Amino acid sequence: MTEQTTATESAARAPTKAATVQKLLARSKGATLAELTDATSWQPHTARAFLTGLRKKGTNIVRECRSNGDTCWRIER
Figure 1 (cartoon, rainbow, N blue to C red):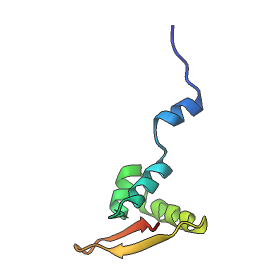
Figure 2 (cartoon, rainbow, N blue to C red):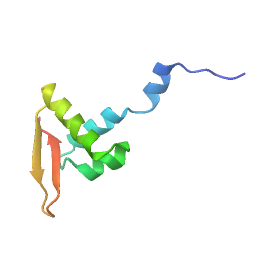
Figure 3 (spheres, helix red, strand yellow):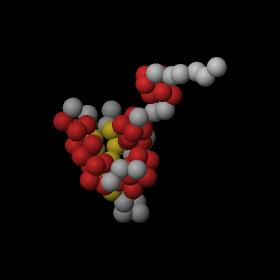
Figure 4 (tube, helix red, strand yellow):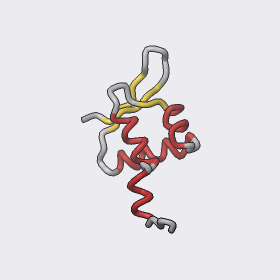
């Protein structure tokens, strides 16, 4: 016998790319563009557009500069 899964069951197992990005942004150190694109396989312009979408939905995203000079973004609580 084979077990069939529905789309909602599959989605419950694997986190979405959007959830992955939000988890990265929720870290205290935030996430760089390279970290976002590596985690999602998105192009840089897609990752930046996602950040814009979060801002438009009311999420407070802070842009910071790390000590090594990399720009990072994080969700401010």
